[in-house]
Image (tube, rainbow, N blue to C red):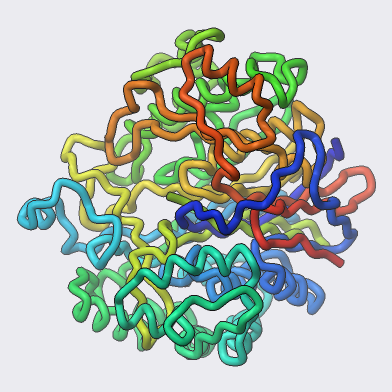
Length: 565
């Protein structure tokens, strides 16, 4: 394993898993692509042209935050089913000058008119998956502004110019994104189809996609800053669009939005500090899972071991049971973060794990005792500033509604609220919903070691843990750690309160998981199904502390690339 620093930025979304991304997965410990190495700066994300835009910013003298914003804007144009300015973002930033980590929650809240009583009057027991009643306030643009004002060196005009040019002149669509895009053909909304279809169909691989409406929207942000979106022309058009479609947005909802700087939280894992953001995101599930795995000698088990995969699945079940009960907006609920991520609490929960038998009907613990896909981007600059940022619409193309005048879809994050008034994540006006998108960073002795992300809704904590185990326990390089065969456990209790399936959920195993491992997991009581590929999409950058060389990984489940200079 190449040990070193790493920095990154994450953008995240939710899109249904489709056969479009079914590329071969590398054998455990081996990589299908070479590690990308460079000694100055590096960017990695799921569209090569977006990564190149970020690299251009670095070469022009911008820092990691400048490059992250420019890449974020580009990926919102180039992979619109996944993310965009109608969604939210979260970020972890390492500032080399102060040697500090900063966390940013740039997610939006429920509109003031969105109440549980509203849904009760409509006879709805759950919030719909699509449509105008799933909209929470988009936080992305304010997140850009907060990052730029606190750390950036370049103007919005400079950062958005490359995306404006591509939106006007056209950007070629790569293979995997083109396949994701096909879901747009099922959308019957006229405004949406005007934005995202070309001659009545989705753009095919290699075809140009133009979005002049988004170019105009970006130009307004470049000229007037974040206020154009939350108080100015864009805000006016968003409210008018909301009224047209039956949404709940008011001018006050948009004008009142503010991102929040938060303190990242951590656990230790074999001498490394693993950092996540606190709820309403699900990042601390990563920390809970690592605490449950750390007492075991995973390195001797190996990546092709039923013992390892059984332990991983059981740890996931326990962490996600707590996730379903406790994770919520801390301004509206008391979330026992410190207790949940403590080693003592993990030791209590670990007693529930039977090494020979799968858990079913997993209950949440008492911490007082002691459809989905995402885009991810990493950036490291010459001074070793680091950004880990994740951005998302939640479902593919979010709510399924886009303003033809503005050129972007609105997210459906409010779908994740519970309507049960007793639930910590219950819907309340002005409250942020539970979030799946999570940026991560790893340090060693206080210095950045690894910044990375794994896309895909519920898969994100599972994927992050698997990447870390591959890197730290199994000694894989940064590329192999992301490409190795994955398992995804589905069927856990959700943030809306549904219970674990009676049989303990389903284990989805990629082709690289050996048949004998699958058979042994079944003998231990797991329900296992074979899949061609699990959700996800890893990007990561590692900085070797001995040489200072950057090591970048971008797995083949996506179109992406790591590029450096």
